[in-house]
Image 1 (tube, rainbow, N blue to C red):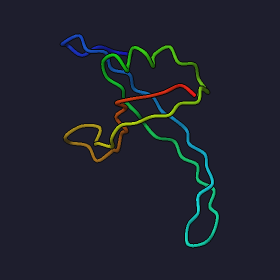
Image 2 (cartoon, rainbow, N blue to C red):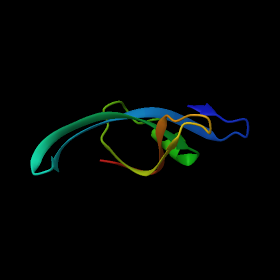
Image 3 (cartoon, rainbow, N blue to C red):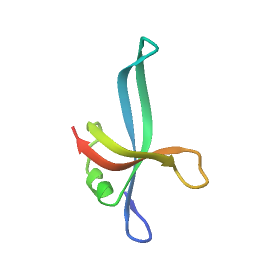
Length: 81
């Protein structure tokens, strides 16, 4: 975890997703790793989460920065499962 010059907590992390999805009448195995960022109280709360924990995340997709095309999931809410 890091802090912005204004003292706001920022946590960058990655999550892994694995599921079976239906597409065009077929079952497809979906696996991916997604870069995420949490800010403020969410960052502080997620910082203590152990590797391998099951989470349900809500938020939005955005670019890593104004000059980047790299996608990052911005976590606005989460729940430990």
